[in-house]
View 1: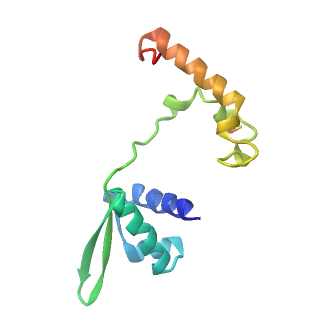
View 2: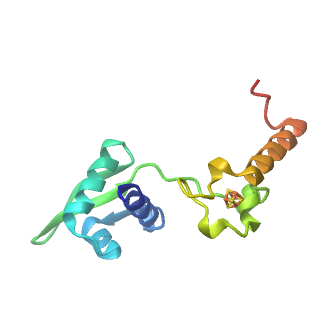
View 3: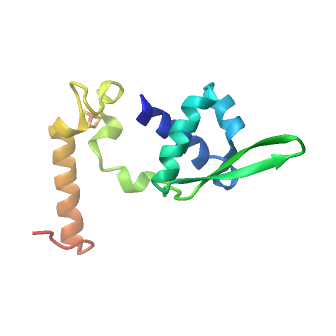
Length: 128
Ligand code: SF4
């Protein structure tokens, strides 16, 4: 699944020092051949998420993969209101699954409640 691979690549880069890794190190970490990895990296580069910079170390050539857009780390206190944190179904919940965030009444209720709370505090404005 290409999206899952993209997520794994971005997660490795996000957690690497300086947000960059050699393509060969990514390949080893993902236990993946260069063809599939190159295809995903080309796609991520086209979307402006990573940059491939030619790399030369003695006789070795390769690419350094640089994450251009680091995702902000989520602070637990910012998401503690979600129903997902204590949900018994979290292991089997996912996009396209029988149990999913798109169809979840618990999550909908939690989002509405948080929206109302932030509205009452004046931290957000009503979108309507
Ligand atoms: S979206 Fe709903 S079912 Fe899925 S983990 Fe969150 S609360 Fe549970």
